[in-house]
Amino acid sequence: MNIQCAAIEFGWCDYRILKPLQGNLKKLPEDLYKKLKKSFEQKGMFVPFFVWRKNDREYYILDGHGREKLFENEKVVIHSSKGEGYEIPCIFLDAKNEKDAKEKLLIINSTYQEFDDFTNFTNDIDEDFIKDVVNIDGWNDITADTDIIDNIYNGEEEDQEIDDKSKVIGDIYELNDAILFERALNKYDIPILKKEMLTSVPEPIQVYCGDGKTIDETYKGFWLFLKGCYHEKVNCTQGILGFYSWDDKFEAVWNKTIEAVHNIKEKDYMSVITPNFTIIPGEPIAWQIWQIYRARWIGRYFQEAGIYVVPDVTWTDERSFDFAFLGIPKGSPCISLQTQNISVDNKHGRELHEKGVVELVKQIEPQRIFIYGSPSNKDYILSTIPSGLPVVWADSWISSRREKGMYDK
Image 1 (cartoon, one colour):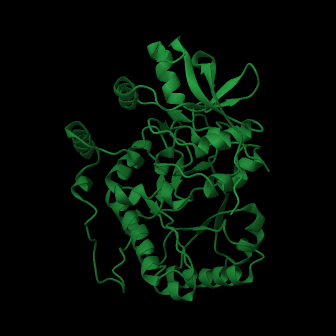
Image 2 (cartoon, helix red, strand yellow):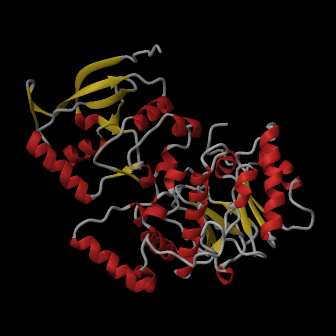
């Protein structure tokens, strides 16, 4: 494999003229600020800033936002071979434009900051680039500022915080990841959802794809909020929570279910669609069963905490029909189905989808189906649903953003 080496230049510049390219992409909490400050006090400065020199007057930080903020706040004077002053060592990286510079910034990961407003920053960046190229530690933390699911508790103070929250929600906090619900009720001991705690998806409904801080007050319907797609600062009482995003954005819901319950209760969603853990045709059946088990377990856990749920349904090939629909009571008010990855041009994919729809209707007999999908395959998907079975549809997050001009087409 041949790899092109991008143009790199070493030099110095006054940190006071540097501009932050990332905007509100990251935040620097006080505890991490103190750690960063202490690291400089003990070790000095030994890593240069990465800078995009847009022109002779505009210099943008690609890596070093936290350090620059510290320098500005503390009025740091640099001691170097150049003497005392404000000049810092920099590596100047070429970028064709701001979009190219942003993509390079995403690849460069900073240690001392947390991702905050990820949605706004990536407005003009293709999702495929983020999915296929970028690898950022703590990817789950790209959600809300105060999303407790993605916090790591340690020490007496944090433990006390969890104890305090338990008083809000009740006995659910006596449970833990080792809890087993009723067993021997199906072939694989997959937890059974409580029918009285199932609900339907309200309509009309559309996916929320705003800036995370504001919401369209003129829209009189309901909202589908997605885990991992920033919505921390908006009112969620007229919406439901779904997990139709990359699995790594909601893996913590399994690892730290207690915190997930607290966050959901705090945001006061109307209900929650159970997680859509990925299962893939051809992968080991044991792994596929485990993914279904986790989805039902979390759904039942939510119900025990007083949260109404809509069960998500997913399957692979005919072998998965043995377990894919277990744990969902017959006659459920509504089941949820995501179809954004189904290609109309793929004959095999269409066959698996169509057979799965027949099987889910046979095994579950739902009163309604909620479908989260791409408008490009909407006509086909709707044609596979039995006549007379009510359907509620919501366009996917990506397609909705593109429609509103929030994504490059």
